[in-house]
Length: 161
Image: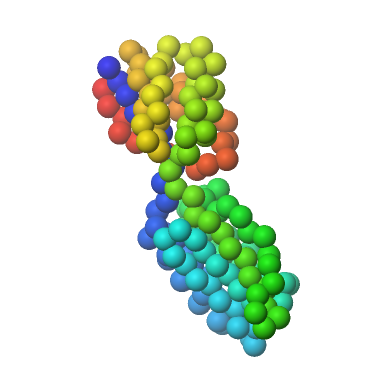
């Protein structure tokens, strides 16, 4: 029986490369001189800090532009409310979302079932497994999910006959 998995994964190397490129651009740009704009990346979050809110917004635009150029979806970034930090600085924190949460998995499963395609959907941890008797039904599910433009970046892996 043909199957595939729906997952939401982050290519951490591409994210790291995009942040490194953004750091280099911020160091070299004239409008960032003296603002001490910093970007910190961990496994779970990205923190951007600057002296002024205008420079913070510009730094966020630089980071997002670099992520897009490297093929990383901006849907992995959640949060992003500017908050005051020590010393009159401004900080914004983005959570890096990976995996499909249970509520989102149930919602996606319901959407797939409501499409009246002859497929079976199972939630397996932080991913969905979709099974069907025919390969064409699976391809229709992939097309449906791509057309949906869901709030998480979705990838389709382990397509098996």
